[in-house]
Length: 220
Image (cartoon, rainbow, N blue to C red):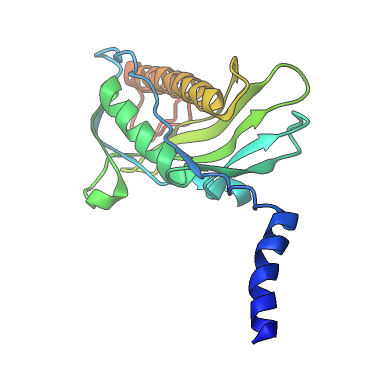
């Protein structure tokens, strides 16, 4: 009985000596939301259905934690603790590009493979970088993607290119970095739409015999 009473008295004393544990940081979740694009030219429109595939990505870019580089170097990257995207970047960027292309009017219809409809064109790509750069200069963000368009009727390449965008992070915080990433991604999508519109316009303007090839690599 004495041992039991002593243990009861000792617990508050031990708690007071060790102090209370610090609170566990709260998890934060972020959406990638690009701004509304400019309308595409009426004569630079892909006839038919354009399908956007799920993007490819390597390693950490397939995971939800936000990435950053403490040194600002392209070869070094780390994951943020307690800061996550609401979805994995390949799915998140696929959905955002679908919405962007629909608003741009670049094609008659823009869908994902989930709808299981026959498409005339396929957009595929790979995420190369999506991160904060904290060193090597002022805080900023960097986005890099490789995007391609293929005509499915003859499996010909309409366009393939790499697109990069860098945006200053004026607030030097995770929240301000998300805003900067939204802006950089929006500009990257806009450049892709402009180049895609130019590719379909140049192909339509050229009159080639059946089986000929344009300088863009598209077979007619």
